[in-house]
Length: 306
Length: 308
Ligand SMILES: Nc1nc2c(ncn2[C@@H]2O[C@H](COP(=O)(O)OP(=O)(O)OP(=O)(O)O)[C@@H](O)[C@H]2O)c(=O)[nH]1
Ligand SMILES: Nc1nc2c(ncn2[C@@H]2O[C@H](COP(=O)(O)OP(=O)(O)OP(=O)(O)O)[C@@H](O)[C@H]2O)c(=O)[nH]1
Ligand SMILES: [Mg+2]
Ligand SMILES: [Mg+2]
Image (cartoon, rainbow over all chains, first blue to last red; front, side):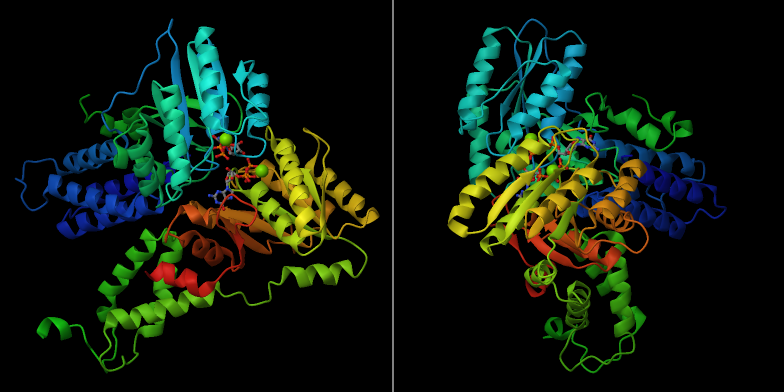
């Protein structure tokens, strides 16, 4: 599960420190170091970890505390707040409205889980009373349309795509126009995997986006991504200005710190996490409950006024 | 002058204290290259052991001594200890009148089916008769994906030589049985090589991982390659270990294909993490989405990327 080990290690580090009889600066630095190592082992961006350590250090300001201050609470709160900051960009994601056409476009690296998540999301909205459908604008990957078609059929969701048209911009435009006419409320557009090193692929993404003018663009990130997450997600942000992130494969053993670093790098909220290969394996994501759970509800949650 | 020469410690015997800071810098450097922390720490420890007590050459800084030692350590772990000549292995096996069986495993979405198709293309260029077995009977579109690849490869093989077909039994069937049937079919029909695609699976899913043991027993692959993707971070270590341990006693992985190397620039640490975890060599690198985007490992250039 995402960040589970991280939570355990951070908790242990904070508890060890706050429980120890001599809460001195050396022990505090050791705690910071352990938190840093735990974050890095979870794939949080190396530079981000350095920043986070520095801010905890600054906030706690170990040497400059009057005797009355409850150091334990101060340290716990600082750690909690910094972790929340890591996953909570304070940006409101788009909320689809019933009775109008909401176009949602998926983008992301190759194999991150876009096509699978498209169907999950369509089904999620369908179950909440939206009229939802899928458009396959991946004309590159072998079998991409069959994959979407089979998933959509299983979930009983209308879909659009082509086995012969090779231009994804054309398919995307036609599909979205058709479904808009038919008054679908959630129109989800799946696109090919791409990466920042190939300019043509990024240009294509822009053209699809211009053709379908999505109300929301979602970037899908694999929970196992490592240090490349920052550069890739930044590049997608600059080019496609996505407004939300979905992290997939959180049922794996990866800690998800790379994908979470993308939140900090792009100031974009995570809205869902994928928890398996099946249609229903999708969960809503909210940052504060997530971090509270991560660090054990107990006394930490009580510290935060939200 | 002081600034220029401060670090020059030619002829100095290195101590643990001298190395502490530069080693921490080296560890951070490797982490930024996407080497898993476990692997980075082990590499730094081994370099530290090599260097303590060593006398530096004149006009050589600790940093450059360390750098050279790290390059050496990386070269050592990445250089395969046995030959990786796939074509020769194939001809050894086919000369005994049976097909060479190669299967591909790995977690979800890493590039198994695509890189299997690239390997097929490479074999076609060498005029082999290849059978591709669609043993991913789970993921939507997996069979059609291979059908498209085989159709494209047939078209290409008109020019390149060789022959390629697909062996498929649709969805829902047991993968190990399909793989075994494909091997039998290939033997009867004089194919040189069977390439078996498998479904992606999480390495922490005990049920899916345990089915690999039956798979290895029934299909008896000559070679099992795991695809690991260059984008993956620390999870690479456990991925490699768990797949390597999933085929039952006496059977492990034979090599890695590191895919999507074109998406990470110089952050090629994943391959270090996977080799560190298992001692198993990297056989191929995937460097793009087209059939020709497959390379052998060039240890020198990987080391240069890692040290840049
Ligand atoms: N375990 C697990 N597997 C997932 C999850 N989401 C997707 N997958 C698997 O990941 C693999 C890749 O998923 P796709 O949906 O094909 O990925 P994609 O981003 O559309 O891939 P491209 O179109 O090739 O870029 C498939 O095997 C999916 O079954 C998840 O949440 N958990
Ligand atoms: N850039 C790049 N993309 C790659 C490479 N290898 C594979 N891909 C892409 O990664 C995506 C997933 O590839 P697949 O071959 O379907 O992956 P898989 O491991 O078979 O996926 P599942 O069967 O769903 O587990 C596709 O979009 C491929 O084009 C590579 O070396 N570089
Ligand atoms: Mg897709
Ligand atoms: Mg596949």
